[in-house]
Length: 142
Image (cartoon, rainbow, N blue to C red; front, side, top):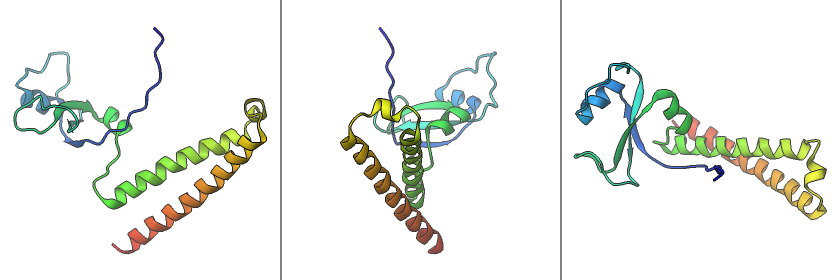
């Protein structure tokens, strides 16, 4: 069976923790071939059942690079606003690149779809401008 692409978006609680500290939390002995000083994060997923007493969600450890490539800090309103801006900006750039690509006309044959994509680009730009102004206002109110 061919693998299919999935995109996950999940909110978790997390804090920095070394691999050794995580193993100690779980009551495990650190394997000889693992580095206990590896930086990472203790991650608590509240959407799954607890697997360790004293926690409300499923606990796991992720290496720092894996964690940081999967999660963005969303602790405050400004954090969440910045995430929203960054996600929209990525999608806006992808749309602009697609509209400007050499094979756009080969893929999109309908003038109606082309017009809708151009309109979507304009709306996304306006939305980006609004989010940018809100972020500026939030920063000046600190």
